[in-house]
Image (cartoon, rainbow, N blue to C red; front, side):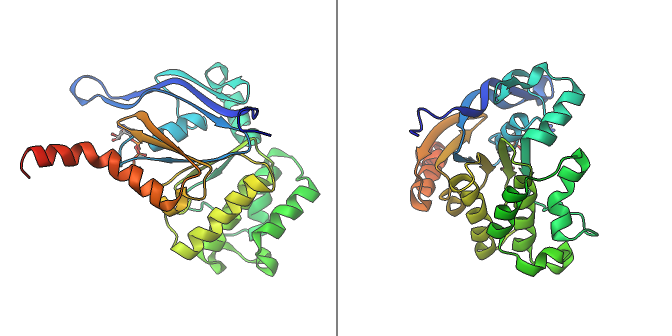
Length: 257
Ligand SMILES: Nc1ncnc2c1ncn2[C@@H]1O[C@H](COP(=O)(O)OP(=O)(O)OP(=O)(O)O)[C@@H](O)[C@H]1O
């Protein structure tokens, strides 16, 4: 299937988010429109404070926008009641956070199936098996999070996000707390989720090497999408990021700094 023929897993339309009022007002997002195609891995990048987390939280229904709309599949989030929103997050969205957020008293496997257990759903056994195989934890599935490395814990968190076959998985700096080897393991799982399980993944990251695992990188600056890169490499991402910071460099040069 060509990328044009793919349908859209999530969509932001004219999304704006303003914090505060008057002099202290911050436009975290200014009329952002973006599509996230099904079966694609997107990385959101940009300088600190550019609105990455705000965009992801609005897309994932964890925060509400000041104006504009978000669609998950065909569902417009602003039309949902709190209860419907909770159900949508539970049934249709997977999350991977920077802090792994595993329950310390449960085994890895119990953590993975916990959201399904809470929802009263059963994992599809074939699906769960392929996710667990991909995870490569072997007999450590019986271990508690405290007995696993950071990378292993985050792989468990990825499997937890995947277990319910959500329509889209959001990761807010999922490798932010990991060394480069563990980051690679976690990103490989997310990559495999897209390539082998046809999932849709959107992550926020500061790391060009992490972004290089994605199919597409979306660059934010000052609450706006300013650039996009397909088939990124760590070098091409780094190059774009330098250019994003360039206006400041030009000002410095002009000022004789
Ligand atoms: N709850 C809040 N109240 C007021 N301002 C906020 C709030 N949350 C975020 N902001 C502001 O909105 C802007 C965008 O923040 P956001 O966290 O989305 O940026 P980011 O690109 O994810 O940053 P970082 O890379 O540092 O995590 C920033 O200027 C931030 O200070």
